[in-house]
Amino acid sequence: MAVGLGKYDDLCTKVRDLAKARGAIIIVIQGEHGSGFSVQGDLELTARLPALMREMANQVEADAFTKAARAVSAGPGLVTMHLLSAGLPLCGFTTQMPREWPEDHMWLGLNEKDRPLPPGCAWCEKCQAAARVQ
Image (cartoon, rainbow, N blue to C red; front, side, top):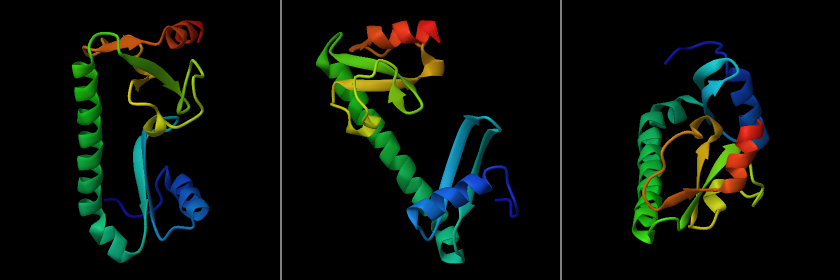
């Protein structure tokens, strides 16, 4: 891990300060300044980082697998796939974060709008129409 000022350190500082946290980790994927990450915390938190990241990765993987398995077993067209822009569905069906959505709604990023869907999923037509306009 690099030590010193990185391209996302200012953002990480803002997140840490807003959360009034002892430490913060941000990961940026294909952001304005490219992809990268920033970690801020004391020595104890930094030493625990690998274990924390493994735990987070396991939870993300388990959540994705559980939801995908439900989609496949639900039958064709019973799970609606939305496109996200700035963390919200383009169709506007909710203002909640995806983790708070009903079980029969999933999401992909706007850059994935041409991706084939898994069995048991159908595109939200309003999201598809909104993506064509953008």
